[in-house]
Structure formats: structure tokens, C-alpha cells
Length: 414
View: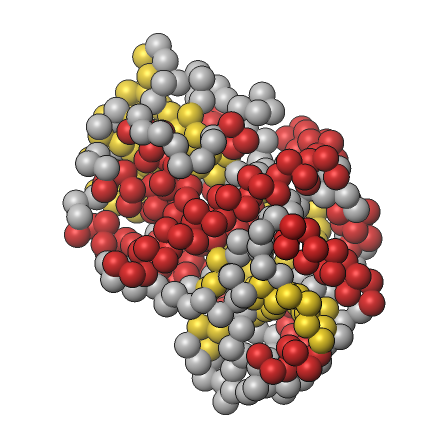
């Protein structure tokens, strides 16, 4: 088939990768340029440990408290929006223990499939993306988080994900080059990390060499349909005939769905990242600093910091107070690292597409026989990209799916 993918993030690129491998002719349309894609500034963590969805008991109460502080890690921008109200209602509806129990095996299996595909890609040497399997540290400094993380470690081990509770001394043993100030941590040895910038560059280069038509800087403005089939994708610069369409446009996916008469409950969660280069000493194990809800990922001799979840529609402006919250937190955990508040223009920002139940939208829809969606991965787009692309290719090729697609049904809230 001739397949058109809309969206050049990791989900779109891996969809192109596996569709091309399956023998299809592929065109990928990206509204911006690849240097500006949301995936480019990702923390780069591959996290099978992340099996508990964002929609969980207590998250709404936490969010309400955080909203009162300008440097907090979570914020919902108040605005008159039916889509936001609906998303909030669905989030509240799924913030239950029962939903968490149902979601854990779904997210676990998707993450483990993705990790295996990353391992295969790294072993193939087709794409160099800085693959490292050093695990992940969930650092905490308070008694409350110590208790919460012990419970999460118990849940992870019960689900078959290795989780080890460490003391401060145990953490420091894993980080001999820098001082770490914590009460303790949960260590997930099965997690990994990559260089997301390099992944995007290498995938784009590889796909171009394989004949994938990559179109940058074009906005999809409408579709031509006949019956249950999409026949053409119309952009602001041209028209493309197609046999099938994949919508993998991240936070902009609801706008494309609306053009097709579909309703997709999804909100963009803005996050920020910045780099510290040429550090005299660096951490070895990627970490999440729990109280700050910020991340630190070593990339060569540099360190990428990322964090915050600012639900503000598609507003791409930098809120420097949110960045300050990340910057100020770092030295509470790593007191010897020379980290300063970056200038606003050097801060990366991207919109993570958040579904209300914390489970991605992956798979076909009933209204169109040649449409597949691949979005809604929240903060785990890079982590879940290969598995998403594999499932998309299987769906369009008529192959048996590697995982049951029912939990990812894009029409589950319609």
C-alpha cells in the first residue's frame, strides 16, 4: 500500500520504519521541522518500570495543591474549553484502584515490547542512538515518598518488573563520581536510556535512504474521503493520494481527528528540558527526582534535565517559573553539580499528548477502513515508540498483532 503518516515524532518515525520493512510505500508529513519535534527534547528514558498510569488515586488532590505554586511540577491552565472539561471528567473517572490494576499489565507489556525492539535495533547497527542499559533511580528525600516508593516497588515486583529499594549509601554506590543527597531510592535495573536527538536524526536519515518520502513544514488542512476510505491528504502546499493514513501528530491529533468527524479526548501536557554541557563530573544512572518531578539523563559528558506537566492546550510559550522549579530542585539532590537557571531561549519545550486514562491511542477506527491512530503516549512517547510503530504496521498489513489492541482503542471514549 501507499501509506501516509501525519506526524514526525518517534511514533510516526517508527511507524514509517516498520511499514517500510513490511514492504509498503511510505510518505511522512511533519508540520514543523524535525529539529523542532516534541520527541527531540525528550528525557530519553526507556522505562518498563512506568506501569502505573497518570490517572491514579490521589493525583487530582496533588494536582490541586501544585496548581497554587508557580514553580510546581503540574499545572492546568484554567480556560473555557469543552474538550478540557471532558478530559478532566474522564481523568477523574479513571483515577481509581480498579483502573490502575487494569492498566498495569497493558502498560507493562507495551513497554517490554518496546524495549525488546530497541535492543534489536541497537544490535542491528542500522541506527546509532546511544543505547545504554544502566537502569533508573527514583530518588526521594521525604518519609512520605519513601513509603509511596516502597509500595510502587512492591507493585512492580508483583508485575514482574525488578525493583530494588536502596538506602542513601546504596544510591551513592551507583554514583561514585557525584554526591547524591537523598533518603533513598527505588532502583529499576531493567530500564535504559538513549540520546533522543540522535535517534530522530538517525531514523530520518535511515528512512530517507530506504526511500521513505519525508515532507517537512506542511500542515494538513483537510482530507478527501469516499465512503469509509480516505483517498487524499490535503496540506497547505499540496495534495497526496493515499491508500491508508496514520495519524501520529501528538498533541495536534485531535485537530486532525476533528477534520474526519472524530472526537479524540487528548490534552497537550507541556514539558521543558535543557542541557548542561561539559560537566567536570556526571551522573551514571538516569534519575527521577520525585519531590521535584524532574528528570536527569546523562548523554555523553552532558546532562539533560526535564520536567513539569503544564496542561495549557497548544500554547508553546516558555513559563520560566516552571523551568526555575526544575533548576532549583537539581542541587537539592546533586549539590556538587554546577547547574544554573538557563535563559528562556535555550529551553526546549514540547507538548506531550496525554490521554485521560494514561493509556495511548493505538489502532484502527470503525468510521474509516484505512485509518490508524498512534498518539496519546503522555510523557512516554520515546519509550513506547518502537512498539507503537510495530503495532501500526501490523494493523495496516493485516498481520496478527503483537499485543491485544483492545485496551488502546482510539474510540473507547466516543
